[in-house]
Image (cartoon, rainbow, N blue to C red; front, side, top):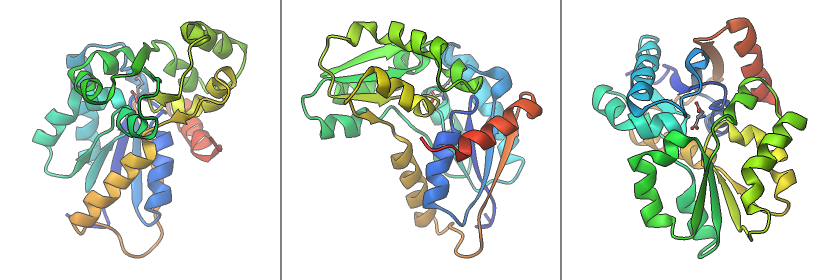
Length: 253
Ligand code: DGL
C-alpha cells in the first residue's frame, strides 16, 4: 500500500468531522478523505443489520478511492460493523467507543453520564464496556439529537428545549463527568455545558486519532513529507452537506 494514499474516514453524517479535526492536528502531512453518509443518517435509530450494511457500503466506496486505512468516526457504526469491516478489509481499520474507560480512570468511583445513540447503548460492544468500566455510569440515549448538528443547529431555543428535556433527570444528581458517546455531540459541547455547569465533558476523539497514528506508525505507513489535505464527500445533497462539513471543520469547539 502506498503511504501517500489517503486515510478514509466516515460517519453517518457530519459528526465525524469532529474526529477528523483531531486526526489532522495529529497527522498534518496526511491526506484525508471524509465521507458523510448523510442520505442515510441517522444510524443511531436503525437496526444493527441495517447499520452494518450501510457502513459496509461506505467502506467499499472509500476503498474504491484507494485509501490506505479506514477510520470509523462514528460510535454507532463501530459497534455494529467494526468486526465485519476488519474481517473484510486488508487495511487497518480504527473504530471508536464512548470514552467510558478513560473517564472511569479519571473520575474513579465518580458518577458518569454517558450520552449516545440508542443503537450504541443497546449493542453488545457497549454492554461489554459498561461491565468493565461502567459501575457508576448512567446512560441516556439521545434519539433525535444528532439531527440538530446535521441541520447546522448548534445553539438556540429548540436545541435547549431538547437538551433540557433529555437532561431533566440529572438536574439534582451530582455528576462528575459526561461522556459524549456520539461524534455529533462534540459540536454541541457549549449547549450541553450551559445546562451542566462545571461538569467536565469527555469525548474519545483525541484517543481515536492517537490510535490511528500509532497503527500507521507500526505499519510504516505514515507520510513523512509534504503537506496534507482534506476532501469531503457525501451521499446526501452536496450543496448542503459539503459547506456544512467545511464550516464544522473550522469552527472552534
Ligand atoms: N455520529 C454517530 C456516532 O458517533 C451517530 C449519529 C447517528 O445516529 O447516526 O454514534
